[in-house]
Amino acid sequence: MVPLPPGHEPARSRLELRAVRELLEAQYERVRAYAEQHTPGPAPSPVPPVPQDLPASPSGHDLLEAMPIPALLIAPVRHHEGGIRDFVHLGHNAAARAHPGEGQSASSSLSAWSGPASLFDRFPALAGTALPGMLERACHDGVTQGPESIAWFRSTPGGPARSNILMRVIPCGRHLLITWEHGDPLRMALAAQRLVKTCWAEWNLGDSGIQPSLGFRDVLGLEETTPLPSLFDLATLVTRDSVSALYQLLYDVILRKHTAECELLLHTGTGTGTGADRVIRMVAEPEQVAPGALVWAVRAVLIDVTSQWHRRAATEHAEREARQQRRRAETVAEVADVLREAVLPHFQGELTSSGLEAAVVYRPDATEAGVGGDWYKARRLPDDRLLVAVGDARGHGLEAATLMAKLRYALAGLAYTEQPVEQLTQWLNEVACDDGVESTATSIIARYHPERALLRWTCAGHPCPVLLRRGRATQLPAPPGGPGPALGVLPHIDYTAAETPLVPGDIVLLYSDGLVERRDSDPDQDTARLLEAVEVVCAEGAPAPGHDALQAFTQRVVHLLDGPHRSDDATLLTLRRITARHST
Image (cartoon, rainbow, N blue to C red; front, side):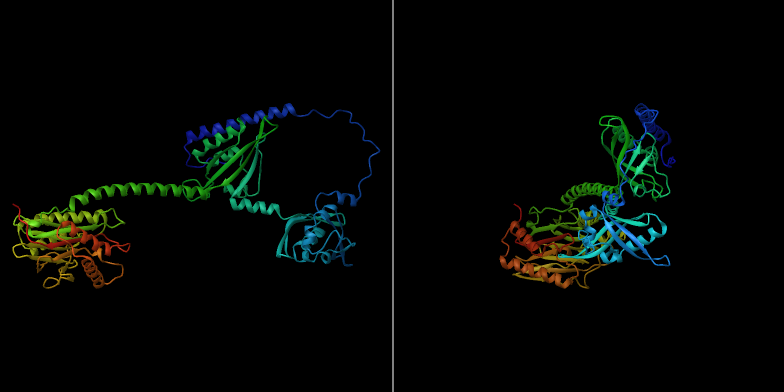
């Protein structure tokens, strides 16, 4: 009996194994009782005498002809020293003439019999096979050789073909018999079993004996020296959860007399993990004494489905992960929608009284949650001046959006100090530095002075704005001393401001690098593409007065620059100088 493997829960396992044992023992008693009832009694005594007029024993020729399989009669020819020098084909039977596949394959015909001849003169193709050695060993050892697969190539009208027969050499007195079967069904059956990792077995319920197919131990993962397992032994090999499945299968087959199947997880001791080493699908049917009568054996096909089971488990795990990812993405998207609505403003004409119109287009990174590190702001301050800013926080997704929100709200509060943009930028840099080494961002921070129609702006590692004036687009020069470093890189940095006077009709474009940046592209080329796109859209028709026209212009520029090449979120904020519209 195979010992119970470790890892089973003792109490439950004992109960389940006891149920299997009791089921098999009860059926054993039923089979034994049936056998006792149907065993014939002793032969009558005295035994009648054997008749004296029996037919004569058949001749060797008659026996050869009666054989149902193809056979050749061979005579070894020996040297005077006793060694074998040839094998002579003496004859063959009707089955060989009716099934001359081997003869045809050897370029000879058994039907055109011309008398005894050297075997390999008559069948030259067989000389290069294993047959000569089989004949030699049969003569020397006096025991049957084979079955052995004999194969060779032969010519056919359609091209070369491979012949294959399963051949035996049988000692027959001073002669030899060669028998064969066309093809090699046993070899092909074993190959098929090996390919699909399957075997079969029949368990006798009367004596617990088992008749397995070849490859039975291999399918179960057992060593060749392991005793063949009875049905109860099989129950001790499987995991605890599989014992109940095996019991249900045996119950259905033995008592209900139905075909049943189940999956068994086996502990064979060959695995490296703590789970099952093999997963076996078992399909079983009852073998009955007679239709509807007692079940005396269980016949089953066992298939090693371990690889399929692992693939299915991996697929199910991947599907669960995908569902969780979708749920997380949906949750993040919902948060992103709320966050975007909260931090990215919608312009409602509040700037027009100070002489500016504003429009914006924001394109989130398609691979993220719908929001990223880009941010912008344009609002009127109590002194009638306008705060305008565009920024790009480091990273992607909600992490970048969190930093973006911190900087945006910090700037909104700092702007009420009425300090110049240089000071606002310096303070915002300190905020980013205090937030940690990962909290870096680029930005353009500007204030528009309507009384002078002047835009003062700083650059913290961000692309400089573009000015569209009378159909020509140019990038504004950086502030004196060049653009300052990105926010959060170094503390205590002084920033300088550039001053850009605006005339009515001027359009200033502030943008994030995600709008123009391409993989492995040059920044100057990126800027050139933006300038070209702006001029192309303007040439198609300069934007008419009003916010809607400016919004359409902005969307058209973004459309020309957008595409599958974009790998970051993108923002374009446009400001147009107009005549101030004071409230009445």
